[in-house]
Image: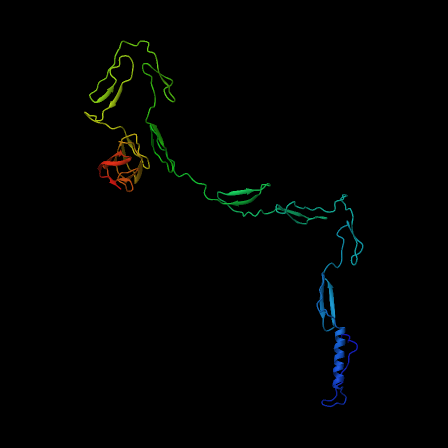
Length: 366
């Protein structure tokens, strides 16, 4: 049993409902007050006990508190380089120079920046151990990126990366002909060959009295002195359908020949040139006729012409419709001409900056 608190006042209590042997109420209350005063004077205001490296348990039956050391209870030297003056109590630890003979007692690593390098393991190493060194993560998620935008720091690390949209892919290459140029096979949408043909001057040859600096390329044309000028003293030119001025020329000069406003034609009139119009091609404005044999449904285009120009189209073979989209159509609408059967054809003329249909066999205009 625990020791009693000294000075306890005992209240006398006799037989029930009898005053004999019992304290009066006044005496009993005074003893009670004295006992409470003594109890509070001897009681502790603390009922919770804590400590660092110490565990505390209470035993109510004995009225005791047990304190247990949960920290270091004793020290033992690990090798001959460590000296302890005792194992418990107030201990003095001394380190000798060790077997290496040097003055270094520990080795550690300290990164300049923990954002670039992390150090772990036995750091520092006092006697033996392993120090772990790892590259710090840069915040970039591993994975595969497409068309990436990359940020690299001064140490060569990728610090930011993001995928981008497609940088683009060429899906069609086309060429537009200029004066004296014919183009076929344009545009190329997957694979193929664009053919460029010079329909103008391809080569010059010098005739009598003419000197050429070359036969092709940048050519300079000059007249030369004829060693034997001959005996011709006058040249004249007449025509029943052409206007010729001046005539005759008796010394030197230039004959100007012009078409009359109305030119009568005797015999057959042949218009210049034709082409086999390919799928997705632009009709050649330097030839009059464009014919086509379709391998499937095909399309082509007709650009703006020059005043008075005549252009003809005809379907020579049909495996699918040919739809030609016309620039500046006089008939309005979508500006298309559709050919769906062999033998269909039409004739157009460019007047007042528009293409007019002046003849048609079966083609559909929209």
